[in-house]
Structure formats: structure tokens, C-alpha cells
Image (cartoon, rainbow over all chains, first blue to last red; front, side):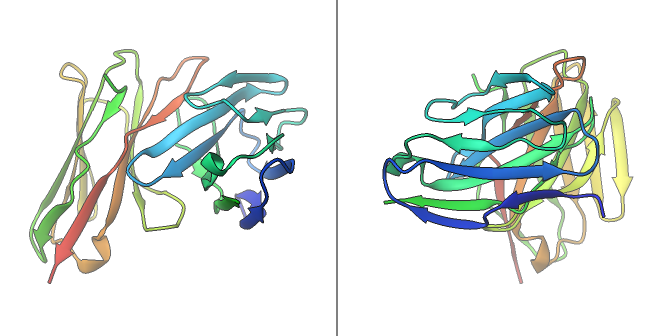
Length: 111
Length: 112
């Protein structure tokens, strides 16, 4: 089954404790992206990747890191999470000029 | 100016009526356009894609694209309570960049 898989689905952590949210797709898509969604603000792009080892900042990259060492995986790293990073996160992947496929989402709470 | 703009709503429509959702975009090089439906706390799901000017129909849904006016719309006929959700307009710039940008969404409520 074609899918984008994110883990974990839910995460509660403390300020400053490094965490990684994983994202994997099995559709051989070139493009992958991370979005965060907050009430009233829609989906805001954090980082996106055009292919292996090629990444670019989105609209809200501060406090986040990404890497694309393999085509299928695109982890999101929060080196020192803060409460303002409490949000719903989505990973997505797509081929050029086509629609995005989304993971199930990760609800992150930083206390 | 936001790259993709939608009215946030809420848009309230009686059951059985036509719901009309609108979206404008600023980047003229955009090549493909999508409408997603999102229920609260869930992932967006694709309901329509459109690539060329004109109308595209799929069941109760019709997407309309006007590249000259940089305008995309979604019509939902015979609205059902299950259509109550947030609708996200998305634009793919195409070419090698192929970045997908989302509007902030329109909340649609279908009243019985």
C-alpha cells in the first residue's frame, strides 16, 4: 500500500530535550516536506527536500533541522524543543507537479 | 500578500445546497492546483486536482481554474453533513522547485 508513515503519532516532552520525528514514504517520491499546523494558521511549511541531500527552508524553519540521506526518509529534528513548538506536524511527499500525500500526523506537546 | 489566500469562514450552507469555496494565488508560474478536505485533527485528503483552465467534475465536486485571474474554486453540490470540514487549497509551482503551498483553509459547516 502506498503510504507516508510518521512516528510517533503523539509525543509529550519537556523543554530542551532533543527529539526526532520520523517520516518514511514508499512511493519513490522525489519531494518531501514537513508542515506544522496551528489553529487558524493553516499548514505552514517548515522544510522541504527536492531529493537526497537537497533541502531548503520553508516559512517557519527556526528551531528545526532535517536531513535527507535516503530518498524514502525525511526525519524532523528538534534539538532543543520549546513550548511554542507545540503543534500538529505533518510529513508529505509528492512527485514533480503532482499532489502531496500526507502522513497521519504527529501531535507534539512541549511542556 | 500570502501566496495562497482563502476566506477562513466559517461558511455555513444548508444541507442539499451548493457550497462554493474560493482561492487565489499569487505566483503566475504555478502549474497544478489541488483541493484537500481535512477533518479536525486528521490528515488532509485530496478531493480534486486541476491542471488546466476550465472546469473539472468528479461526482458532487467541481473544480474551476482561471489562470489569467489566478483563481481556483471548488463547488460542492447537494451538500451533506459529512462535508463539514476545513477545505485547503494547495498550489504546486511545478518545474524543478515543485514546492506545494497551502492556503489557511476555509471551514465549511453544513446545517441540517
